[in-house]
Length: 300
Image (cartoon, rainbow, N blue to C red; front, side, top):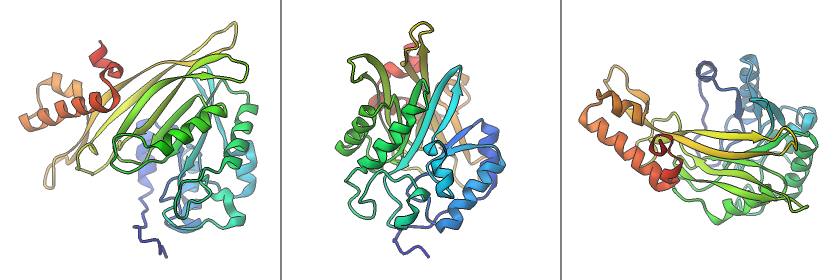
């Protein structure tokens, strides 16, 4: 049983089918609920994902599985190789046995209470392994931050800098249920060479039934990756986003939940007045939190 005081969550297998149909290829499985159903639940999640051909990072069945490529997935992204790693801040007070640390990539040593001390030994070892993969870029997916806060906190910035210092190029965050800022970052290696990296502290909810302020607003993020064929230098050369609204039409509607492209739906002219207002608010909130300069349609 879960004695942590948090709800123990799980979901039907067909969610994996839905994600596959939507075009997802790689998933982060480390999050604060990943131990809700114990080790058996963790394993079953991975089994279901494997059956459907997903790649995944963050949780592992065995030490051997974790040791294989240090739990890293290297993917081809338009001809550029990207090494993906994934972590969570904690497990909602559910302990991972000290001799089973491979189950979950937790980036805090004090994940059972304060969640404020980075596991630098694990991070440095994993990032060294990522660098040894020889991929063009290293991307880290993070489950972190304070729920419902639209700005990152100091600890997120500290952890992000720790990963950047260890060679990360891209950091993609989630968990707060709302958007948090994103930015290009100038990265400098030990030899003084510079290139551009990227961090998004939180992409917010994507598919959800939450209705509190900001929780129904999300984006599709596009990253532009560029590789110099002569020097091999690879970096994040730009980014943009597309504002989306997760519309809840409430109980009784023929289609209750629908994820809407804000600009496209407004342009169609078919949205009722109340929905149009929500779409316009979603765009405005994206601009407030993320900056209007990244908005694909606003920039156009």
